[in-house]
Amino acid sequence: RIRGRARLAAGRAEQARQLLDRVVTELDERGASDDRLAPGARLAYVRALSATGAFEEAVAAAERLLDGLAAVPDGHWLRGVCRREHARALRGAGRTADAAAEARRALAILEASLGPAHPHTREAAALLRAQ
Image (tube, rainbow, N blue to C red; front, side):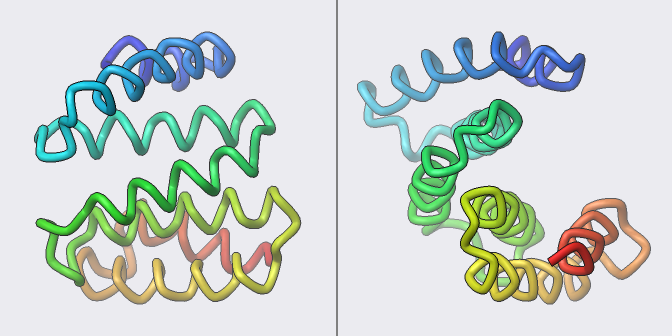
């Protein structure tokens, strides 16, 4: 999981996507939705899909990720980050109205949970401005 995120951070998105695809498939096969590391791996997978231009797949993966956050409170920062990545995928898929609405939801969560100066919040605000 960590190797996939590291490859993504190093600009090797296709390698990260392949590795994270295997990780997510394994999580699905194990039924590991309650695995505490699953949201991070799934979020990295959404990012890798977006980074490789597979926006429709990223939208679907982000929606599965959000559906799997039942144990995470509504205003938790993790929900905001997941919504931000969902918005990024929607934008890439050309669904700009949906992307803007999701980016607004993400920004509201992140501002309330982390404050306006946090990097996650600033990234969500920049995504919204780019709409």
